[in-house]
Length: 420
Image (cartoon, rainbow, N blue to C red):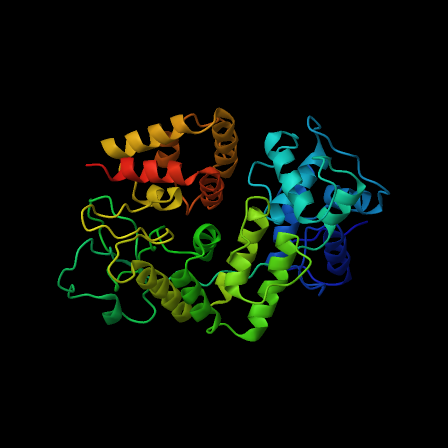
């Protein structure tokens, strides 16, 4: 009779359990015969994906499913409309690899199809939206481990002044080196700053490497390149080499990047999900001091001399007769959304200016990223529901829509947003 295993068990039976879980892509830890937290999480995922009671205890039903799956010669080909435990298993594998954000419900719908297409494209497979033999093999292969991000540091939000003013008493240089100063676009409404002595969670407006990549791939400004080169100088060669390899795999490239500017300039729609995972891995490897320095460099360099610009946007030509237009990206604007009249108008005008198909695709992506069953119908609702800490994939959906905007769209949106 099979042993009943639970957290705290150990021995040869646990070794067999870990091997079975690993062979199907549910476990990536050490085969050490120790039923710890990692093994428990893998068991829970396997049970959920196979319609079992997800209690973390391996009894006769779990053993039977594990061995049935492990000895099966082939898994069924899955198509849109398929249902059942095999679909649930595919969804779980896609979710573990960062491609799927929806529910593990065993229903092959639009969200599952889109995740499969992105996975196939990133792994050099035939992009047909089906889960056949080759796609199953790739899904079951061990995923590249993603390092746990470093704990968030306290963040002070500082707004760049639109005109020369006396330096405030609490400047970024006066703060501790572990407290980065983050610049966010201004809409004329003051934002409370976080007390450096407070232990509260930092706001969602912190600059991330995915934000920087999204902007750099569109502008590639010399000052942004300088900030990235400064960051690269503070990363060990070993970490950089691992990142470049991950980036190559995520981007489907045949050659390896040699610098951060070279890599981030290739950030694009097709590989965005995989590239975000690589960037998140890299950010988790960077010390808080180096990340704070990069954020400060990016903000200061983007501010420029004699110009007034917001982060992640091209510098505007100086004009002594008219103030320069501050271009505002959606992923920046959503962080300071207050539902003011001008902001609502800007969002409504932008939605009306974009093709209906583009908006439909975005709303589908947003709903999946937000774990919602209903499809959003307006950008105003999207901005109202934004919660990047609870739904981090919402940022990726917004970045996808940003890539669909023309310069004229962005300029008009920025003009409407800043109208008083």
